[in-house]
Length: 178
Image (cartoon, rainbow, N blue to C red; front, side, top):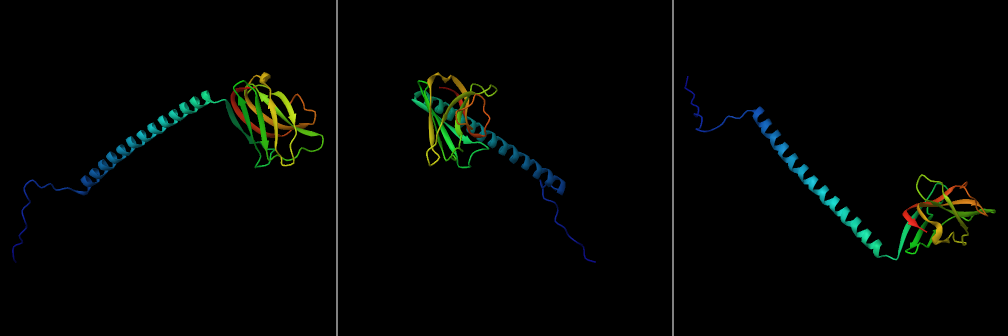
C-alpha cells in the first residue's frame, strides 16, 4: 500500500465550521439591519421637518391672504359629485358656494348651519336656492361669530331652528368667523 500524503495545514490558517459561518452571517445581517434602521429614522426626521416647514408656510400664506377657503364635502344625503366651498374674508364676511346638488323637492330648501365647537348645538343660517345646474350660494354675515364647522342640510322651505333633514355638505372651518 502506498502512503497517502496530505498537505500540512498552512500557518495562520483558521479552520471555520458551519456554525461560525452562520454566526458571521447573522452578525452581518444585524449590522445591515441597524444601518437600514438608522437610514429610515433619518428619512422620517426629514419628512417630519418638511411637514413642519409646510405648515409654517401655510400659516404664513394665510396671514397674508385676504380670504381663506374651506372645502365642504358631501354627506350621506348628497350626490357623490356634490361639493362646496366656504370662503371667509378678513373682515369676517363670507360666502358659501355649492355645486352639483339635486333640486330641492317642493316645500324644501337647503339651509346652512354653523357649529361654534364640534360638541355644541348648531346655529341656524339662512336657506338658499339653487339654479337649474345645482349651483347655489349664500352670503355669510360678519356677525355669525366664530365656528369650527359649517354644514348644509335639506330643510323645510322657511328654514328651521334645529337640523332635521339629511346632511348634504359639511366642512371644518378651523375656527373661522363670520
